[in-house]
Image 1 (cartoon, rainbow, N blue to C red):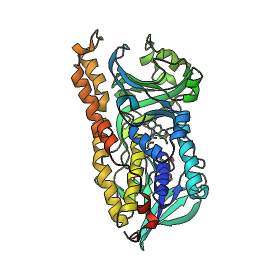
Image 2 (image 1 turned 30 degrees about the horizontal axis):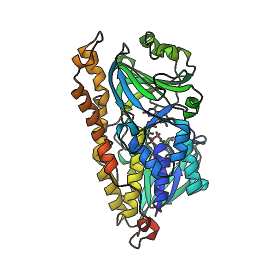
Image 3 (image 1 turned 30 degrees about the vertical axis):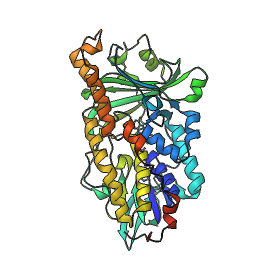
Image 4 (image 1 turned 135 degrees about the vertical axis):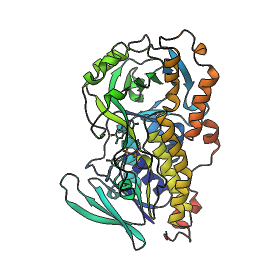
Length: 433
Ligand SMILES: Cc1cc2nc3c(=O)[nH]c(=O)nc-3n(C[C@H](O)[C@H](O)[C@H](O)COP(=O)(O)OP(=O)(O)OC[C@H]3O[C@@H](n4cnc5c(N)ncnc54)[C@H](O)[C@@H]3O)c2cc1C
């Protein structure tokens, strides 16, 4: 069986590694001429870290990523609403990492190139269409820079891991149109600074319409007593963008700074950090409506192409990693390709559709709105505003919805494909759909 993976982002590269580990031949096609990523942060939840460790990437991650100790929510006066341990400290068998996206992409790309062969990672290949016929799928590409048509590629399965503006999804759902706008924009930047709190804490401040997410993401900086801090600010509806989202659009801090200019707290000088940041990127917080199906014939969707979600609860990258592992196991062990794609979809689609909807309701961050509504001028005792039991329940129920509560994750069997089931070794692995 040969799988064509469209997109060389976190989802696509993890799919390549997972398929290779399952004994399945794979090639990746990425539209940009060089696979690299912006040096901004991303969080890997324990469910994704488990998969990456099982793919043999533990040492690479540990060398560069911050092991997140704590997640704390604050109101806009810098008063703590809720704090919880994360990763190992929360009882998971795997850590949570905050990592520079560039480092993560490089770890995945290096591993993929050495395992599947660099010649199977085709940069500069933009998928424009695919055709399913004669027991296979044929993908058509152009060189994005020149518009030149490139040779078509044939495979047994095609996986659309091509992000929120997925060409694969657009061909499966031609009437869907543009992403659904939340009317909100996020601005992001990175700055080296003094560590805040314990140097390993992820914080979220404010409420839905003026919010900041801040975390350190570099183990190298931490070892030198510094922090490489990733920050994100989000403003409310009046800031709606009329431009489609690309992750690398730079912006001026004039667009948002006024709302955060007083956010210097005794535990973090956040306004000063924004003021010192040189390069700022802007992106609309869009998603898409849940789909009834991801798989049609020999084609399926994965990661943001399948379930783009609003960036709440640090889920999107982690869920793409889990998708990849579930898909590889399903394709390696099901009697036919069609059965494998169905099994993948059965396991992942309902869960991800729930997360899309829950994130439209602000996911676990809803406690920030509750604190803002109930105590708009701040509080002295959070217990009088939101009882602890309610806070615990909201935090726990989001983890259950997103499939990464510690009890379930620690007990679940591995998605590793046992050697005797690896694809090439089975007589019934016919490649028939
Ligand atoms: C540069 C960048 C920065 C991001 N920053 C954030 C962030 O700050 N917060 C957040 O929540 N999420 C962010 N995301 C999204 C987040 O990374 C994804 O939600 C998550 O990692 C799932 O990844 P994915 O592989 O499914 O999609 P993506 O990471 O979007 O990767 C899709 C890949 O497919 C490629 N591609 C697209 N169309 C085609 C085509 N027709 N043919 C071939 N290749 C194609 C793209 O170039 C891209 O490399 C970012 C994504 C990118 C690419």
